[in-house]
Length: 247
Ligand code: PEP
Image 1 (cartoon, helix red, strand yellow):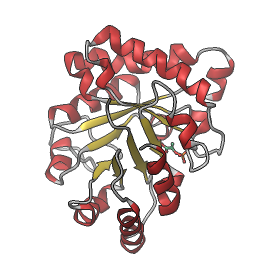
Image 2 (cartoon, rainbow, N blue to C red):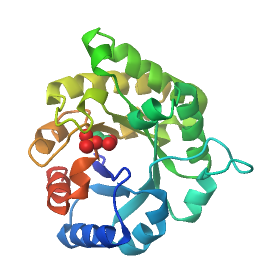
Image 3 (spheres, helix red, strand yellow):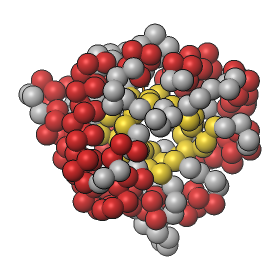
Image 4 (tube, rainbow, N blue to C red):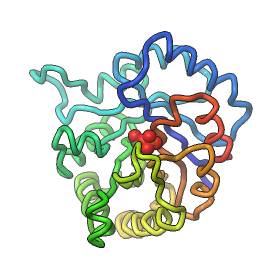
């Protein structure tokens, strides 16, 4: 059975001083845990996070990547540059980027492709808004979002991580029930199975107000292979409780 993956998404939070305290506390609290752990940090802190987590068992991730390989794209960071910093994962298609930066399914698919081409695992976020859920469109939306990534990445699709993040649950304190989440994860697994014989290898994470209190129940579901954790990844005791629940 594959190990679960707990990935923290710090979003646009932190400072050199705060990051150091947080990472040292997480590392100190991680006694022989049996799951994979990553922290996706703001780009300026990649080198710091890399240095602080060296030989700790924590992998470092980024929160975005350019769709371009290199060149005149001011402000962009390429997948090759992230690889140069030892980055293991990159989040693509987070709902905040889809919402505030108008990222389309096709763009997210291209970003996933760039990451894979540089040997970085994309954590592909999919999820419906509250209006879409209430209109009964949850399956249609997540399948459309994942289909674009499958279409662009062909046989490499078993190398991605998927994160099901219902938009209405992100940073709101509202969590999908374990049963609601499992239902969508099963749909995503079936879609991956139709695309690759290695679908069982793919980690499908749940994200959306995962915390110390609800993690064990969510992580106990058949197709929930870990968590993408926002707010709770900024507090060492909370992040450590989620890691412990994933053992
Ligand atoms: C996220 O940003 O990916 C996320 C799941 O945030 P939160 O845990 O704060 O809802």
